[in-house]
Amino acid sequence: MITAVYPGSFDPPTCGHEDIIRRAAAIFAKLHVTVFTNPQKATFFSVNDRVDMLNHMVEGMDNVTVDSCQGLLVDYATERNAGIIVRGLRAVSDFDYEFTMALMNKKLASHIETVFIMTNPEYLYLSSSKVKELASLGANIGGLVPPYVETRLKDRFGYPQT
Ligand code: ADP
Image (tube, rainbow, N blue to C red; front, side, top):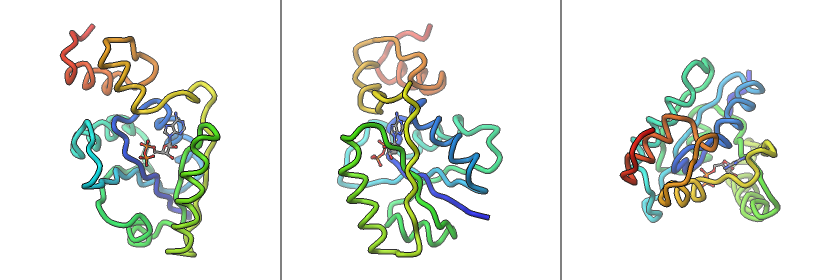
């Protein structure tokens, strides 16, 4: 029985994240989706808001839990008995960062493997920052984020709900 962690900022969670969560949940017995907080990094949504949006996203996925953590990812994974870190890969541009992080985590905890899941081509260009930029300009973000996240973004940017 393999437990995995899917860490990220999820600021906010998008359909690209949801796709990775569904696919990882189909592979691993248990999946912890974890909002990692970095006090040095300013985020648009609070940790509680991001956890709330993720909880809506994983409703009905029985082997998936959502929480948050401020510490080291490998410590969190070890505490949860998770032997796998799941990360999504979009373009070559993700590779350098992900490669460095995977190697660093391997150095810190050799018993933990990082597993990459390729993006669904539909979400290749989708990122939380693009979604925020589009939402701030009033663009239609339907299909890029789940309806609940769309509502939260419109709320924050003061656009009427349709
Ligand atoms: P981080 O700040 O840790 O990179 P993100 O919330 O931006 O957090 O991303 C979390 C993980 O999800 C990363 O591995 C990222 O590459 C992946 N991811 C983000 N958007 C997509 C997408 N559209 N398709 C596949 N993976 C994605």
